[in-house]
Image (cartoon, rainbow, N blue to C red; front, top):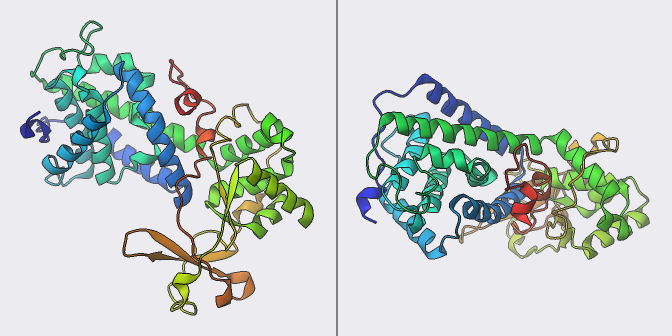
Length: 387
């Protein structure tokens, strides 16, 4: 593939107001979605969506794409293509989708260009702040793959060979493809926003702790649901706060936490205070950012992805999960990683309450909530994509 093929194609001289409006609203929707998630939960979600996106791409294209091909595409796209010359955000978004159309129209699909083009769109969306790691464009396309192929001008006999029309492009066909892709983007962002709605999360978690056989057989009580919900919302919780949310007696709550750890649903991360020797008393840059402590409890999804697959039946728990006891200060290390210094406000902000923690992306339990239901299965249900 030549470098010229990676350049952003020129946009049509006239873009319909309906397409510009869809692009405008999509920017707002993705910003709202990003605001629903704690950083830890967002990292977990992103990790899981990468896995499901690979399966979605296989469904779209009918074959797996070599990882080396995708790596080459990433390198070429990052060096050869840029949206920097387009100053208007909504037009940059539209240009990203136009780039997808251009790439697919200039190469046979059998070369893996379909997956490569979608990866390039993901990269463009990330560059312009569309938070593509929190929603799945490939999953939406897989649900509407026949419409996707039609929008690209492909017939059933031509899929996997050469796109219909070769290198020819008409503004009408391009704009039709962009309009279709914007619709898919809206559907996926709307789905994720609804799944991460606090009421929906509360219903799903409550139902899981009341009906899931793995949890009940492990002796985990339904009273744990509010604490687990708080963990999903906050990203991390002090062990003491987690127990408080259960409403159980301390000994019973401790036993329940141990059971959660034993089945792999949550994990307890020890503290490391070695980096705080020179900053133990400096709290001037402290900001509110959630709950954390020297024995933080983290969600672990590997054994919980299929727990939340039934409609809610139980009464939602109390609103205890909305309170905050600790504040943390972000510490950026030289290697680019992040650590946090924690101050317990309820204990008067004593320096002895500080702890240091590394962000972990392995805790992807929230994704099980997103795999429970989907309005359009079409052979690519949420649960099957991540199992």
